[in-house]
Amino acid sequence: MVLEATGITQQFNGRNILENCSFKLHEGEYISLVGKSGTGKTTLLNIVTGMLKPQSGTVSLDGNDIYNKMSEHKRTKLRADIIGYMNCAESLLESLTVYENIYYALRLNKKKKFETEIVKLLEQLHITNVKESYPSQISSGEYRRACLARVLALDTKFLILDEPTSNLDDESAQLIADIILSHKEKGVLTATHDSRLMCGTNKIVISSIY
Image 1 (cartoon, helix red, strand yellow):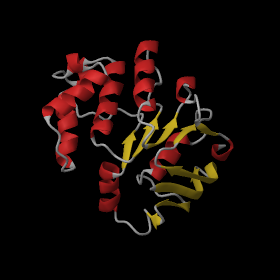
Image 2 (cartoon, helix red, strand yellow):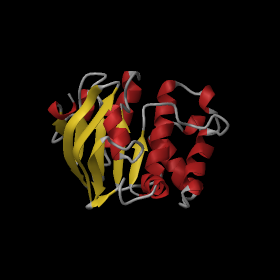
Image 3 (cartoon, one colour):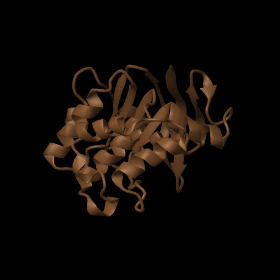
Image 4 (cartoon, helix red, strand yellow):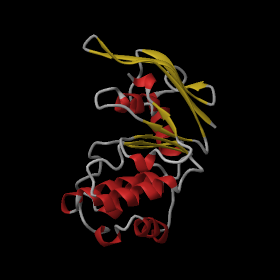
């Protein structure tokens, strides 16, 4: 399966944020998206995950244009089944515990996982201790790990991650980086400033987002 962006251009207030940006992400490929703040990394991730239609250019999944050939409902389903997206904004439901946030996402998308499977994921991310806590009761590092757990629980073919380790202590950032790098069998696109997420055979995209 291939996720492809071709000729993506996006403007805000008459200024090009993205200009003619293109790339392909295959399953099993890892791409780090790097660039200074304000160069359009988050905008690009919102576009390739079906959340923001570009002013020009196309986003396709195995050749199928996700904006011109898919309804909004299908694009929402796409994020549950194919493209798991962890954005940089606060996204956990405040009225639900950490465990309930993960379970709710699975139930909403008609995916079944046993409690033991969810707990195992929480153990891997070292947040079992906050399983029954609400988002307002946990640290920023725990919050970010809970968001990652929710995305990983969906078991999608692609992972799209926006600054997953930013503003975290070194221990939390290293743990998240290790978990992300352990999922290289998926197609992974990570917008990051963290050198830990740019190591090895990562493809680093720079010029296309300026």
